[in-house]
Amino acid sequence: MSEFDTDTAVTPVGDGTYTATVTDRWNAISDRPNGGHLMAIMLRALGAELPQPDPLVTSAFFLRPAQVGPVTVHTSLTRAGRRISTGEARLTQDGKDLVRLTASYLDFGQTSGRTAMLEQAPDLPAPADCVNPLAKGGVPGVTIADRFEFRYAEVPGWFLGKPGESGTSEFWVRFADGREPDGLALAALVDSAAPAVLDFGVLNSSTIELTVHLRARPAPGWLACRVSTRYLIEGLHEEDFEVWDSKGSLVAQSRQLGLITER
Image 1 (cartoon, rainbow, N blue to C red):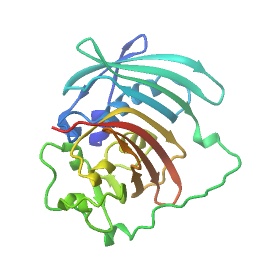
Image 2 (cartoon, helix red, strand yellow):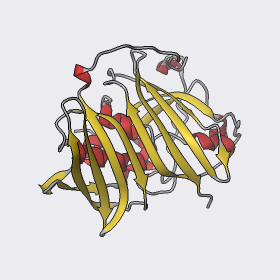
Image 3 (cartoon, rainbow, N blue to C red):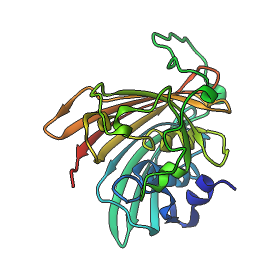
């Protein structure tokens, strides 16, 4: 079993409640468990309660940082529909709410309809022709960086201590242990890469709210990503994220609101 599946596993204890364990393998820059990973644990539990198999859209508000250790997911069904079902989840630790989430699920195997694409996937060299900025070692304390492989056309300026202030980055990513992507993984992955605000010389950002739209089941292989921040105002910023699969299909989009937490 992959590290991701092991660390998002949940155990039902009745009445829509599940227990899980947050490990130290998914810590972010703040040396705390990554928000996208917490979202994946919650979606794992909520998905077990809904009749459709694929997450479609989810929105999470992050109320408190999590600590490594046991957590509880409380789920509730809002509506079970023929095509789309919706539910809510609440992640608690030591009796305190950490994250509140609402999500809708459907079956991507049953979707059809008109399609129009006005944008294209990132124009990147093949992963084998790109560079891995972490090839010589990860970032101390940022254990989530060890769970993924990243490939850039060139080493980002912020990584060299020379932020470019473009606010945009494109790269390839995949799980380091070879796990193939799926909808649950995509929901976590959009919050797993280096924040775009690093390109402004920002060292740390905390997510206040994260919304993810899943667009299709991803094909196996590397994922091409585009992340951008256009507005950094009084310490608050948005981050837009796109994920395209190995066949060039858009499979996920997200937007989050972040707060700069300089320390």
